[in-house]
Image 1 (cartoon, one colour):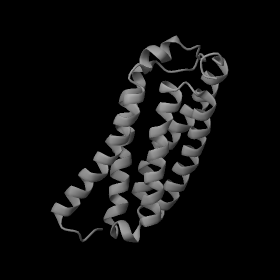
Image 2 (cartoon, helix red, strand yellow):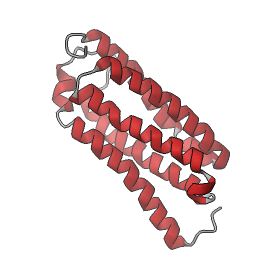
Image 3 (cartoon, one colour):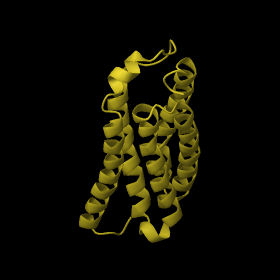
Length: 165
């Protein structure tokens, strides 16, 4: 457990949550018209309804922020530089995906991005788990969702080559 003062822990939690929500907002800007765009695409039969993505991502971004905070609490950013650095890199890769897919209609690059994201999430889980198993466990739903999203990205890209070239 952390020996940081409660006030510092609270500001740390807020900081990690804000960072996660900023990435969410950056992706949100790119996907402002995503619901209509997504509805117009040919989709596999197993594609979820568009309204499901927003609430799911909000929960996942919250879990990501809490996971990073749990690791940060165990010795700070210096002690956990690699784990938190990989976490920040995967957040950036996450934020780029919406731009590639929704804003720029680049299906192949979006798929490459999400594969890289998946690998970075696996690395983050492993590194977080070593520091604080709960932090790693909090990222497992994120990995599962991104695994599903990668399959969906690939399927939608293949079904819509004229739009997502």
